[in-house]
Length: 95
Image 1 (cartoon, rainbow, N blue to C red):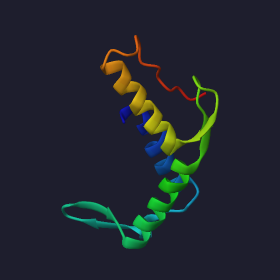
Image 2: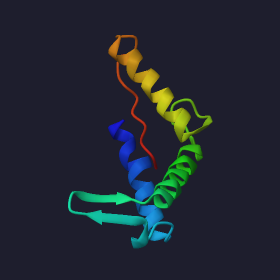
Image 3: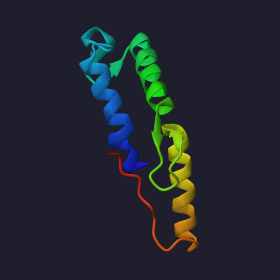
């Protein structure tokens, strides 16, 4: 999952902050930490789901897939590599 953190999770965080989809009022600050309000959490999850639904072209197979499907394809490729069925793991690198 770590290779997808900057592509999916970090990009969603930056996007919701930069576009104003989440604002300071969407956070609750307490002595034990900071959390999203229920409304802020809902908007963040909606943005995360939008990102997972965005399509990209798989660099090896050449067809368009959602980011959600791309994670599954890469997991299957990693499994095949770990089982010795592939000689190397084909990493997904965005443009």
